[in-house]
Image (tube, rainbow, N blue to C red; front, side):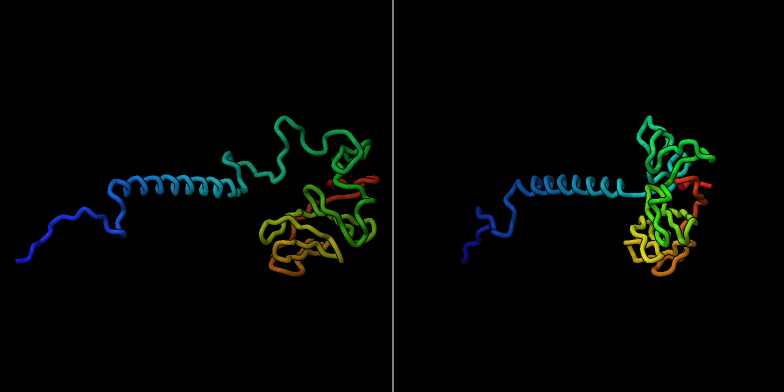
Length: 181
């Protein structure tokens, strides 16, 4: 007869050692779970919204807590209050800073001078994907994200994927400053 062995004292190389399977699996699960939570927190922080939870409009450029609105201080630079102007509004830029046939990009606007003495202001936020435009050159306002281009005179798209015009804000020259009309 053949002798049959019913038990073995050796562990096969493909098996986990007894008692370690649960510990390794638990540690791995904890680390993966922590990584997943961290990634979720980062993604949630990157989300954007155009409305606050209380229903008011969202600002891309909020002021620090306890500060006054932009342009309400004193001084002579761009964004400072106008001193003795007829409108009493904030200066968006100096007329001397905006080249004829071109424009400048400020904190909130693209301000252009398509013809001598005619000033226009448009939102600096591209209507295609919400990127900020980055350049005014050769009679066009350009967005770096996807190549959208807009007219410095009308804000209408002239090239690229944008289909809607940049939002215009009416402005006028008030002495040496450009102010909202």
